[in-house]
Length: 329
Ligand code: SF4
Image 1 (cartoon, rainbow, N blue to C red):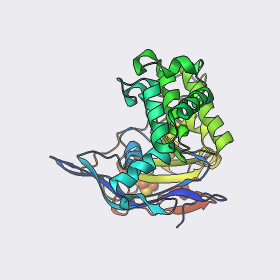
Image 2 (cartoon, helix red, strand yellow):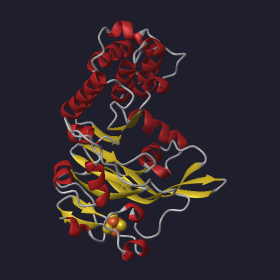
Image 3 (cartoon, rainbow, N blue to C red):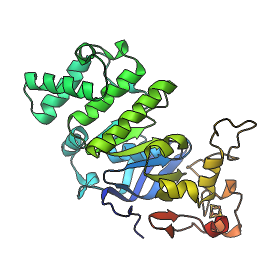
């Protein structure tokens, strides 16, 4: 079954990706055969609770997994090239020029002993081959583009002299300065205050509209998904359990886990207790048999513990992995 988004071509296609963690307690198969596509020119949300494997997916795409985690099998095809077959040197070039990543703690992602100028000019000179003068001009332009007031002042600052929101803008500037095709944004607004969150969301939206920058937004915040994304993949215990266009997912959630996530969302002006999904994401050293969601699922039946569900088509560009999804419709 193809999980392609209608009317688009995938920029990245992941097939059978296995990323395992080799711990003293055993092997945690955090990703155990992940299949997933990111549509070109779109913002795709990857949602799920903490521990569901969202960040591991992004680090695997970047090939930045560190021990005890390791990619053991699969294929990550980007612009027709399997990233898993590149040498480390070739992959470093992809990271600098084609795929970038921003994180929840932007200050921690910037080298504290370098000014913004040191970092940005180095990237522009190495990856774009610009002279020092041209790199400086390009750096000022890109800092202005990401909405930093007074780029000439920011250029000479160290990360600790900037606010969290400014550091995130610098990270985005680094990502777009070399013309990245894909931005992996891992909880990019979680650590920021509400006003700054809003500004960063606006900036990411503008980048999609104006430059067609493909983005993978990793988040547990469905409000952010509604705001920014056109496609959504829902991840549970290392598997994508549902993928759809954003409207289809919100209008017709077809997996009990997606429903649970939507119901546990804070509603504006709502009073009373927030519903949450009972139970926790399972320990992937010993994942549940059959459907990994069955110990928490209100619809679970005996078949669920025995048989792992395969993806089934709900509608165009919408699929789900549940034996009994029709009971929810
Ligand atoms: Fe629930 Fe069974 Fe569907 Fe899994 S397969 S989500 S346990 S109903």
